[in-house]
Image: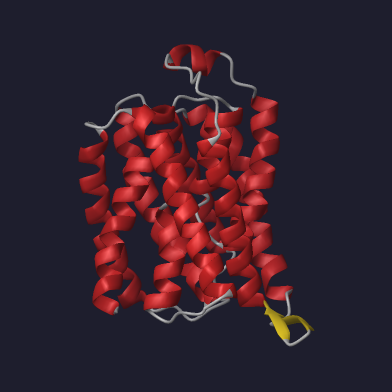
Amino acid sequence: MELLGFALAILIGILLSLLGGGGSILTVPVLVYLFGIPPALATAYSLLIVGTSSAVASLGYLRQGLASPRTALFFSFPSFVMVFLTRKYLLPRLPEHLLTVAGFTLTKDLLIMLVFAGLMVLASSAMLRGRRDEVADIRSARARLNYPMIFLEGLLVGTLTGFVGVGGGFLIIPVLTAFVRLPMKLAVGTSLMIIAINSLIGMLGDLGQHPTDWSFLGKFIALTLLGVLVGTALAKRVEGRYLKPAFGWFTLLMGTGILVKELVV
């Protein structure tokens, strides 16, 4: 199972660099189900893994002009503040056992996984039902950005990202394409910048909260960065209009799988 988990680390890097998200969608389940790491600790590990990988992947998009640093900053500032506050103050104060009803016990770990999966299903729906008249011209897309709205969206996404402990690409990409209306390729590069900032800042809120296996994390991150290199090469050969539905279906599949695993199996 561990060999499979390390192999999937490469896939995580490919997904991040190719789709601008999806890495955390796979990272948390891999850490929880294949390595047996508790969800609360897995979300902390995920922030470091996804944040480091996204930072490296975003450099390639930035060099090609396929990232909007200004959008990333307007989105990231409120977002990473909420990520930090959620990780530092909200999660540690949640009791391990929240409630028990008719023999069903809702624990803190189960709540994290259910919220995680539910957000994935909602995000996939937004991607699959998104407008088809996507703006193709990157210059015109930059010119009509609504920065106050981007700021408010950053507050919401940051809170949710901090709670489920992921980079948030599966939430950021639908927001950037459906509401900010960025072309998919520009959304991918911008999302990677936001994910890197949110994840690495959010990780600070976890310092001292959990024991950390740095040897394991070093191996996992190294393999993820290998995947980033592969994904960056693939991104140059894949058209943006194919990425949006691919991201939507992948997110829906993973979200549904986690719901079934947690509630049925």
